[in-house]
Image (cartoon, rainbow, N blue to C red; front, top):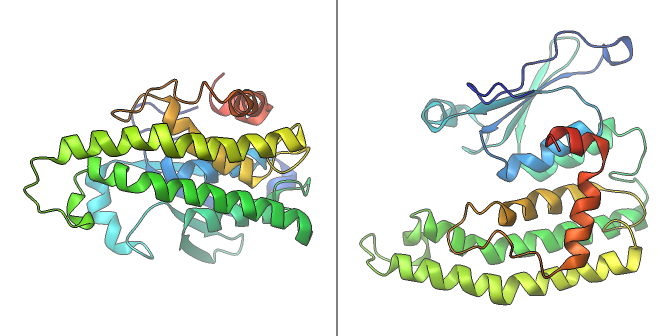
Length: 246
């Protein structure tokens, strides 16, 4: 359960015997889904206990200089012997969790051919994120990164144009790619079992259905029935269904 005051899930008080030697994991991010959500999904899919440490932006000012690269999410892993390591990069975290804790061997298979299918879809996810990022950052007031002056009266109009163009041009293109994958497998993005590619894409697409981004209708995925059907299938996975309280 989430503590709605702190936005955190309480750390596990005691572990069952078969988990007693597992490292203690603390995942720190803001109280949003975004970059950390695929890591959280990997942890819950593997049944790995972790502290879901969600901080506010005021706390981030103090924490930022202590992080590996001045960014979140950050993962702290404390081993049974007390040794501790801290690392960043959310995709690296997701891969590590799947490889280390997944007992089914399905989330991130060691087989090279199966791995290639997964890495291809992860790359597709990254491509889609790159197409969206300028429109996102412009709306967050980071327009100077794209060559615009600090005083940019046309910013709101530019953000509207960029986001609407993404929804009408780029989103359908990527949904077409994902739909083709799903039609080929008849199940999940890379085959008969969910993988980390499914976790990353699910976390990514949830954003577009929340109605939190200006000029992005919350029903923008509805025309892509193969994708929405797959999302519904993902939400029926017991661990994911419980995580989102469905």
